[in-house]
Image (tube, rainbow, N blue to C red; front, side):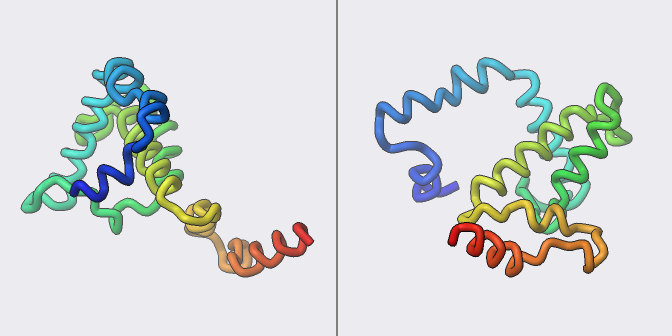
Length: 137
């Protein structure tokens, strides 16, 4: 992560920055859980790219909400790779949230909704935008 990315992530106004307590409001609250989610990242990287440095291959991670739900059904159990399904739920929830926050528009849900649906049942983004524009008028 380069410096240009860090400034985008962290608030530059000091008063607003105090309202984002990453260490005291996240890491100190959930140290064991965050460590377990980090293990999920490592195990996933070893599964998909054992010859490459740790990185998030988004092409292998496109169905966050479906995968999250599948792991949620087995919460409290251990997956075949030795990781807790609950840790995988957390990883998928963070991945979904990251993607949602990255989106410039508010249509982040369309890809998730349309996944594995019959074409006639899919959301057509163009129709959705037209419908919303008519409601505004």
